Amino acid sequence: MKKKNLIIIISVISVLVIVVGVTAFLNSKSARLKKEQQDSACITIKKGGEELVNIDMEYISSIGETDFQAYRDTSETEPESHQFTGVPLIKVLDSLEIGLDGVEAVMVKALDGYTVIFDVSEVADEENMYITYKIDGQYLKNKSEGGSGPYQIIVRNDPYSQRWCKFVMEIDLQ
Ligand SMILES: Nc1nc2c(c(=O)[nH]1)N[C@H]1C(S)=C(S)[C@@H](COP(=O)(O)O)O[C@H]1N2
Ligand SMILES: [Mo]
Image 1: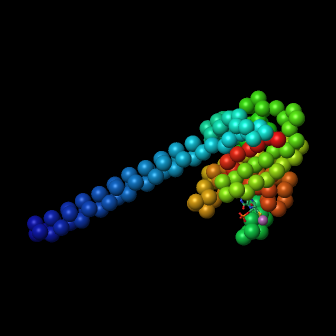
Image 2: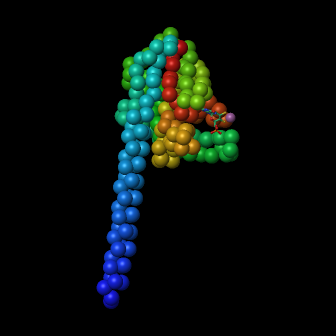
Image 3: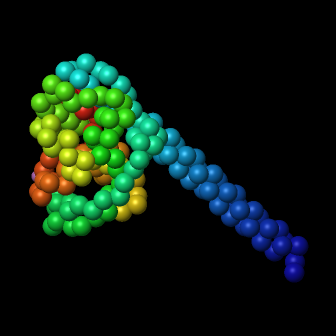
């Protein structure tokens, strides 16, 4: 082989190796950033409008996550069965030692201003209302990524999923 050809081949291979390396580096960086974003996503718990505590994904999942099945119905899709992962809201409140004495309603507020009011009896039912963060084993994406997360309140007894509050930021006991 001519020396010139060899130089060309080596140059091409070097460029490819660099491109692959840089891409892998950028991907791992964005995956790490994404994981950090996910981990630091918080929900504020309030009582009568006053902030009690801020909880993150690590705390919520440590309470004891469960998988459950529910039918998701959106404006664009027919009802479909999915497996969700989350923690019953009542368990989160119990673990924070936040009692429901004197509480009548629970107001859930989202990033986009959407607000859903639940009767306290809906919250007390452990198999009904969940703070959810995974669908079919994948973390719920943020609003900006076209998802319904990082947290979504899922109410299994609501067959139309209208009250499944997406992008949950705040839960206020009233
Ligand atoms: N934060 C938030 N949650 C929401 C909504 C919304 O606009 N914002 N829409 C509700 C309605 S009306 C329905 S039908 C379901 C599914 O809405 P989608 O079709 O917009 O996903 O989410 C519910 N939860
Ligand atoms: Mo809707």
